[in-house]
Image 1 (cartoon, one colour):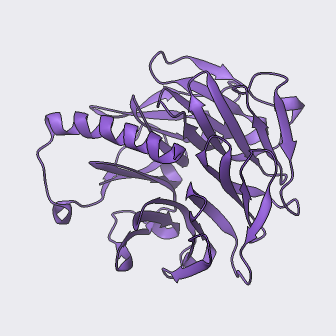
Image 2 (cartoon, one colour):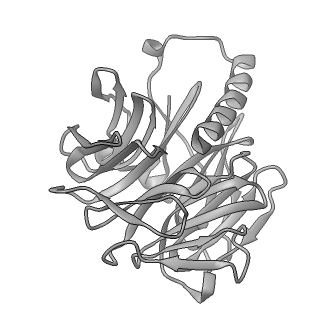
Length: 314
């Protein structure tokens, strides 16, 4: 599927680079490290590209992981007004980093040339945007933006002016997360304990979750029958195509999840990191108590980001 193809490509590239300079060590020898950054703003999302890892956050900062540590790749956001950036995603080829944020901010960053295209305020909308999903290659992407007003804004023409449409999947509650596994197939979650599905990128249906007690914040959509959702109260739900299976990790609110089959990572409040294997979820020790907002897992490197410019690496 789409998402598997992209992850395989990015992980293969990162693994090849890592093997050239880093000796192989066992997973048991690896620990989470607190890494310095050049800013003090909260970092809300993190991605892996062909140019390495990038994080986005407050005041419009875009950070890049370089050989000598994290550096500022861009600041001020796509408009230069310093809008906070809350969500990000990468094109299938890893060439473009898309990010969204407050006051309608939408940016498209070329990780090779460092060029930044501004797609902000689609159809003059300046609501806060919480997350973004992109499918397709650089310059020819489908773009899906989760809005705080309960709408999902979408463009099948790389976010060009005049190509945006919008839809309200549910009750109008804020859409907190969106993720796609195919060009126009994916899932979204909102602040009203609801999960939505689409297979055409423009129409959405509710798929759960009945009797949920907590709001949802993070979603990992890997296939129509492979979906993981996390939210308040440490809850994790997995959809296998037939039923929702709930697992509990504790009391901390979970903000993001990244799965690969039965294995995965989830992060949340108080610096918590949970790892899943075939036996279930287990909390790992971390050197920070800062609230974590997002996590990315690339072969050889795992990165979590959060409040006060926190970056944890393993």
